[in-house]
Length: 428
Ligand code: MG
Image (cartoon, rainbow, N blue to C red; front, side, top):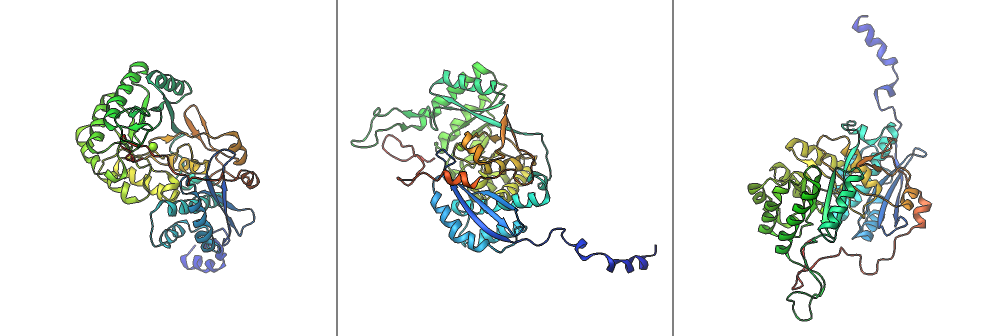
């Protein structure tokens, strides 16, 4: 056929074929769903409804410590602004929502962004008839490896707990001597204290630097060097103590040491890098790209440890994963016991489609949550599995969520802070 003959045929083609096969879509409602999940959670879900009957998305905006600030921001500042907009324009909506607050990159704003962003990806996937990971490029692994949480009051209890994790199929285990800072606490009432001052457990950096490497020497002597071991310092150390701690941990061949320094002292990672090869996982409390970007580009850390909902959802988290890939770092998205199943699934879809993936933190949920949220991801023998359904693959039973309202917060709901002998607060 001659070219001019072909051109004659073109006007006959339906115009819609050259455009999206989907009709225009609008956001018709934004529901804010706070719930305790039948437990003690302080979860906030965002449900974005659209002009297509039955098409909606769910996002996670949870913030355990500023719960009601996020709810107010969603209700008063996101909802009225979002209704009527096109939910298919995820990147545009993320950028304009990010910038419309003028002051940005804070945790509350990021939680709001996350609730919207995850719900928009959920809608996009449902509309395409694909799980979100397909939209991100498809699977690069068969399931998502997770690390388990092990710990106990003494060395023997830690070994027994780690052995239990290994017996359950986990290959990666994080071990803590009691809670965060464990091994570094002077017992209540003991030690030289100011009159009338702090009487509870008192954190001592040098004690911690001394005791935790000894714990891992003992653990390695009992379970060998094959299991991949992690430990979370939870930002409890300062400067040279952090450097010395990582140096002492080097012979224990850790998979990673997590947050050995607080976010205010990131320059010290350069010193750690100069004297040892202990891998560093960093970023649980980060909320600004300037916190993690230089650490990755300068190759000062090995794992970006951000929580997907704390940095603003799937959109910035997939960019973080790409950034890690370019500079040879890996992701280790944070979960934590107070986190919710939607955030877990958001991490799952990035984890399973990114070659920069390192490890995912384990998180399990009680039966009340599984009933309230059909599609909760499952962990079996150390691997996290999604259900392969379109979108994020999870739903929320709003009636059950309403049956489980948030529990009253009488003390402001703070993060529990540790203190030193003289009463000084320790950075978490
Ligand atoms: Mg942590």
